[in-house]
Amino acid sequence: MINHVKTSHCASSGECLTVLQALSDKTRQEVIVIFTYHKELCANDIAKQFSLSRPTISHHLNLMKRVGILNARKDGKEVYYSLNKSKVIGLLETMIKSLKKCC
Image 1 (spheres, rainbow, N blue to C red):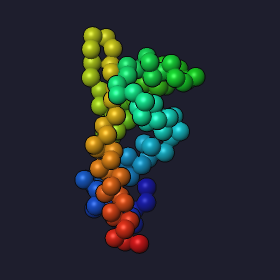
Image 2 (image 1 turned 180 degrees about the horizontal axis):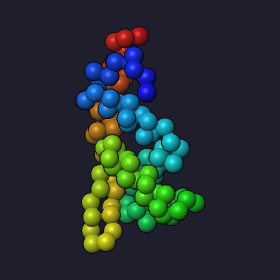
Image 3 (image 1 turned 135 degrees about the horizontal axis):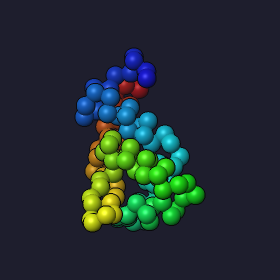
C-alpha cells in the first residue's frame, strides 16, 4: 500500500484504494462488464460466463460484495448479484474530482 497518497476525498479512509484494488483483477473487471448487460444475475449464471471454477467465481463475487461493488440478495439457495452502481459511480466521481483539484 502506498502510504503517502491522501485518500481523504473518498467516503472513508482508504475506500478508493480498496475499490481500485478490487477492480485491478481482470475477472472482476469482466464481472462488471457482464452487469452492463444484466441488471441482476445468480452466481451460477455469472459462473457460466467464465472457464473458472464456481468456487473461484464465488470468491471474486464475495470480495466485490465486501467492498461494496456488488449488492447480493438470497432467494432460497441461490444468491443474486447486482451492480451497486451508485457506489461505484460515486467513488469514481470522487476520484475524478480529487485528480482535478490536485493536478
